[in-house]
Every structure is written in C-alpha cells, then in structure tokens.
Image (cartoon, rainbow, N blue to C red; front, side, top):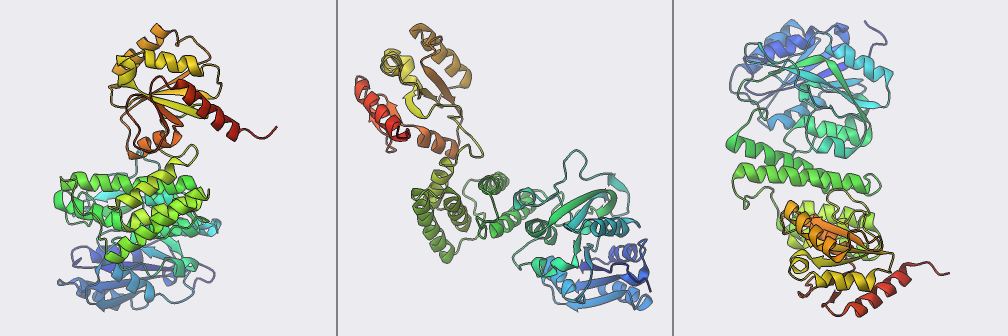
Length: 476
C-alpha cells in the first residue's frame, strides 16, 4: 500500500465508445502513479455497441481498480454524475476522462503535485494534443497562441470554454460544490471550470498534454451548420444558468458587465449561425417572463435609489430570464449607462460634467447654431459641446465638423470644449450618450426626456446649466 499518497478516482462517461474506451481506461491504469491509489469508474450510458463488454473485460483483469456501472441513457453529464456518485467519501481527487480520449503517463502525477503544493487550487487542467481516430497527431497544442485562463472569478471562465474535460482534476473537498452537475448543463467541463472558479483558484499546466481524439462525431469541436447552432445554444443555456443566479456580494460591477457581454456575443454568433435574427436561442417559459418583468421593475427602483450594483444584478438576472423582453433590456441599458466608466462603449469619455448635445447635420447645415451656443456658454468651465455625428461616416464627420469649428474660430478657443461623437454605436452606446447628455440644442425635439432647447433659446439653456452646476457643487 502507498500510505500518504492522495487517492485519485477517474470518472469516465461512455456511450457507444467501443473503438476507444479500452485505450482510454488503459491510459488511466498506466499512469506513473501508485496503482493502489488510482481507481477508474466507467459509466456505460446505455450504449448500443460493445462498450460495456470492453470495460467489463478490463474490470475482470483489474478487479480492484476498474468499476463498471451500467445505466439507461442519461447523456454525458448524467453519466459523469453517476460516476461521481460511485466515488467513496474521502476521495482526495477526482479526474475526468472522456471515453474517446487518452492520457500521457505522467499526467495525473503532475496535476496531483500541483494540487498538493497549492491548497488554494480546486481545479487544475492541462493543454491538449489533438489526435485522429488512429492516434495520429492533428494539432500539437490546442491552446497554443491563447492565454489559458487561471485564477478565481466567474467572468474569466464563463466567457468561453477553454478547459477540456479529459484534462480536469478537481479536489475532492469541492465535491459537494461541484456535483451533481445540473441536468440542463450540456457539458461537464465548462460547468466544472466555471463553478470551481466561484469557490477556488483554477490552475493550468501546459504539459503534459491530454490526448483529445477528433473523429468527426465529437460533441462540439469542429461542429458546423445546424450542429454548430445546437452547440451554441447549449453554451447560451449554460451561461444563462449562472447569470440567473449571480449575487452582488460575489461579482463586481465590471465582472457583471463582462459576463453579460460574453452572453450577448455568443447569442450574436448563434444568430449568425442560424442565418436569421428571429431564431429562438433560449427557452423562455411563462414563469421566466414573469420573473424577468419583476426583476426589471426592481432594477429601475434600485437605480432610482442610487444602488447601481444591486440594480445591475437585478437587471442582468432579469435579462437572462427573458433575453427577448424589451422592457428588461431597456432597464439593463439604463443601469449600465449609470455605471461610472463602465465596460464597453463610452461615447462621452473625457467630457466635462455638463454636456450639451447638438446634431451634426444641423451644425453642418447651419454653423451659426454651434457658434451661438458656444458664445453663450464659453465662460462656463464645466460644459462640453458634444456633436452627435453617429449617423455620419467617421472621416466625413471629422472633416466637416472640423471645418465648421475652424471657420467659427472654436478650434483654438480654449474656453470651448468640443467633442465629436462618431459611430457606429450599439444600444448601450446610445444609452450612455443619452444618460450623459444634460441638454440638447437643435430644431428637432428630443423624444427621450432630455431637456431640449431650440436655436435662439441659448439664455434659457445657460440658466439650466448654471442651475445644474450649482446643484452639483458642495455648499461653501
């Protein structure tokens, strides 16, 4: 017996894996690790081929090291959960091994060494070498050229899944936090990485590399067309699960914004794969819609009370519950627009506290509108005149508005702060432009509730700005 050596239990989910499962299990048994401290649990998930027979023969050859569990088909995640159930209490480490993959002989020893040396790490994963059905190397390093995520925190691991299943080893003490994996998760690896990052550090080893077998029927790698869309929908479902459960004390404001933006990017990719902006990407039940509506109302109330962090949590959770709700999406944009220096577009970055917005086409058509505004406000130090040129080509806007400013003598007037806002802006960008605008000056009345002044009413505009400035200044 190898007293003092941590125990490792290998979880193998197998479905119709007859050509490969034997090699997978043998690669686990052949690890440079004390044989009596490494045990393999294979769950045959209702296979219709000879998978069970292959594993049964290995279990007969290694009765103390290989366990075969048979069940009706529950999917890969269901099979991993069943394998985890078969692991006795007190197991030191649990490792994932897909039935069509294999391990180099030094993999487990290297990962156990890291976990032993770093008690803060709850999950460690490795790079992978992509091989074909015969074992020939297709790609030496799957993660070459990217920065593998490490550390602690949900955003890093929820944006995309770079942690492959067969590379994962988790600490046994995290078993209750990680298992069972929810039934509606499509992948065990992405769940384990994201969940582990919530409760512990996640570490990466570039070597040794797991052997990932690409044989054309893999669940996600290399999928195209309808299969690609199906995998993207699964990814959205996983991200949505976490988004609907975020808590303010566990996720910062910037993290929340990054998580939501990752979800939005994946949704856009799914729409592109579907070939239509009207594709249904997530299942929204009536109860989800009702929850989303209530959270949207709560988000606006929290924002009005000045609690931006809790408001953002409510808005994100609501938008995840029903991503198609215009009311909840508007609430989310409103909250994010109130975040100081938030993630994403900042069309008024660097502007002074009071912003007067003018339309670029009106300024080009009648430069006197800008001239009169500048003359009326030039002595107010906290004012920026923002020219909304989001409908213009950027180069065209710079040339035309620059020419107007030169002709009016504003380009060299240090008293006047001019800002050119160019596009394209997305929904959030427009929301932040609207939220940051104190007043609008032009011939077209604003429909967003922002105070509006027609040309010729610059004195009234000036009085509004003086009032706002006095209200913002601390009492002398």
